Length: 250
Image 1: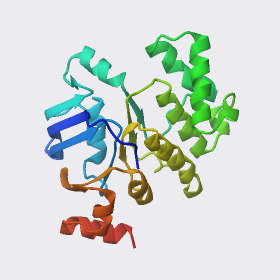
Image 2: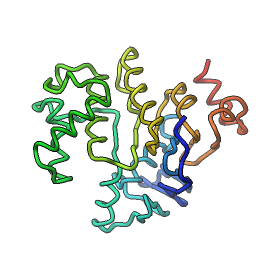
Image 3: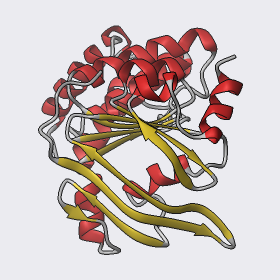
Image 4: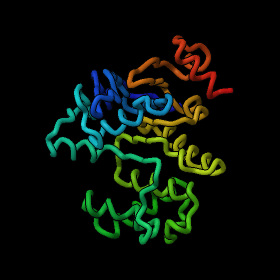
């Protein structure tokens, strides 16, 4: 479980909606994540969980509702969007690494462009983060020479190098072979223990059970149930939650 939080809301979502044409992908979702806490969102495919995540940093433009990140209200104002994105790191299903750059160069690039760091400082930070995710020896290796798990750890290091206050993970292990999943989840568990504020969309029930402070179950664009991992797995309140768990925990 993550460390104790300050009780300060880092993310506040109020009545969030997102429509794609006539489809209500997100339908009135309200959530709060305190600083230093880990929220894990689970649910069937198409439940809206990844859309909620992408709305937090404006990768998807909300149809309605409000989102506050570290005290900044998300609006269509480019200045507000950039201010929020500067504080939020995001890791996707796909690694999105530049194949012609080494691991070190992939972690360095955004620092120099966005954070305006000099080359020496950016490289130092990159090496520190590659050490943090357990692959310092891969600094000079190209993505094509790395396993899927190693590539995802480079992607995590790249996000961490920007010194985010919040990390968002959108099914970060879904593109990995089974034997590579644990190495990525171990890095995420370490981040949770360090006190990083995290919102994680995942199907990895073990991670949700061990690392989350709160588990949120979504279905058809709505929050069906939210509780501590202990209560969620031992005594789910809603019939829809019990059905979902019976299908994935068999």
